[in-house]
Image: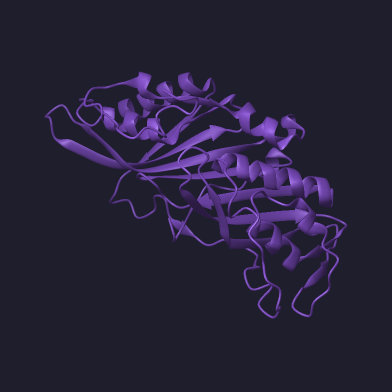
Length: 289
């Protein structure tokens, strides 16, 4: 098994019996050491994992199905490898449980043990219209910030924080002088990166709320987001890189960075980092998920 667990293996045996040992932890320090910023400032927030292929047996042997949300604190020393989580969830498909609460309790216990932190687990019924509601990002969409420009956006191998300070002025580049008492809120649907193990593309929507005295440039921010397109990094590491870069350049008094990544293997991953826990938004999912 590689340092990243079973994610990069060509063949996989799917367990048919309860197998908590399948869960594989990956140290957050790997990604945070690569960022090279204040690691302690990246521990405030939550990673919301939403799973749509949850199944087990009731005491009559009849399959039960549900959706789930796992809330993993950013302060946990580990993240869980996504494929190992899928295999773990598959391992309870033919295990009998007396109640939904028993399922929820077991998953929470196993994830908490794997990640060495308290993981919250919620199960949602498929016929509950109020569960896992689809939301819409708030603020301004900056995806068209370069639409009036003739500039050719180059592909870069790694995120380029210097793009945040691009001094070029174009008619299409909206410069916003921010009131220090009001956050600037925006989002982009163009976040893309690659899995560092399989090199498969990961797509997501990025949302930021930032309060800063510095002038904000939509076009520069879009350039910066596009610089992630060929970057190899886990979802959590990408969000933490953005949080670190925005903190360094804008020196904000308040900052919230979150991403909703599209689903793979029945699971979507949604990291969120904040400068203060009071800024933590509610979990949600988007229409593309």
